[in-house]
Length: 275
Image: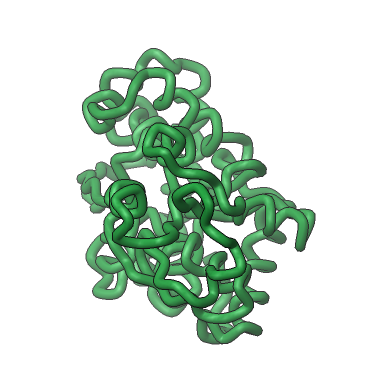
């Protein structure tokens, strides 16, 4: 049985999925057809149930619980890894509620966190994540919200960090910040979803045990990143929570959903997060 599986080109995802899609770990008789896209594109594809298994922003999962169930493995969740608000030097942070802010998509967790941080829906202008810094540096936007490897490279664009939304989240909750997770279409058999979940967990373990095995695959999708930035990206976003969310990880996801519902940023739902 062949299943479509979708994730981003970012080093953390290619690191996590390398072993699974190259047959180094198995999910019974299942095979996988990979599709790699920007995370906001994946969020949008999920509205039409484009893929069987897909990486999604946790914010997007909040809108898609009737169609997709969250897996315990493969997540990007941790401490010190949240989105950053950046601007050119001299920007007054008090103006964040007044100005348009470039964001990496309206269904991203970054955008959701910005709403929680501001206490209201921001004046968000969505765009592909790697175009945000150049536009802020050029003065097209006074502020931007950056994710992924941009948090390592924004000083090269002459930008400063206005605030760290991951640090904001940790101050507010004491919990790690849930950024993105892996979800399975609810029309798949439950036993199959559990097998896939276990296989992704094994794929993460394999990546940790054999880091050189995935290096060429990661580089092929991160050609504009230095080896140092690529490794920093993996170190930041892949951890024990990627093997299994565990109780703390689940508590963090549930806290994000609860706070977002209370702010009216995602709809309420009685559908369980997991199968």
